[in-house]
Image 1 (cartoon, rainbow, N blue to C red):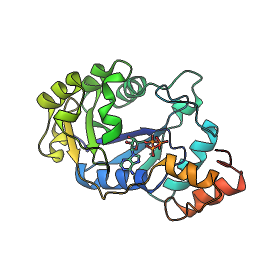
Image 2 (cartoon, protein in one colour):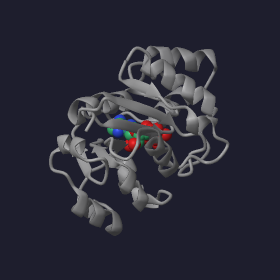
Image 3 (cartoon, helix red, strand yellow):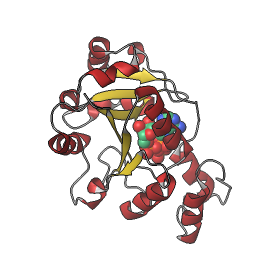
Length: 217
Ligand code: ATP
């Protein structure tokens, strides 16, 4: 069986060092061949982002440039329809075949809401789920919704490296460097004319300034 492939979706409004460390440490902890970054076009779970999907995609391209293991998947941005992870995973499965291990990467906050995602139970037939720790969001059965806690209980893999031994179906957690950075915090700083430097790559910050993004509260 070949090395697992990671899929990392998000709004990336804007992309920041929390995202980059999650993807980088997932490569190390899970032995991923690569991480496919998939910015959401029209995220179904939240309000409209403040900048266009193409601008969010541009920023992800800038942030990930130079990392040979990071690959951009622009399909959700290019699609006119709302972005559903299950559709992206189905497309990847068609591309990769049934045996390649696929790992959906999510932060602990996103995982806690997984049971509200479109056809969420189908995700496990398509991919493993790897949950990174995030400050303020414990990954404990007691803090999850009941139906998700049940899936977590029976699918849990104690060793993240075990995800390489099957194509899909397990849930693992991994501890990443804890960075209490969020896109919300960055948007708020920029809207208030404050510095967001060292929370995200300089190239992304330059892009934000050049295009006058996130100026409005
Ligand atoms: P917002 O503040 O706008 O909600 P965000 O910073 O949470 O945005 P998203 O694009 O919504 O960023 O997140 C994409 C993925 O990255 C999610 O799975 C989220 O849990 C994870 N993530 C984001 N920031 C961090 C962080 N600092 N540590 C760990 N995981 C993170």
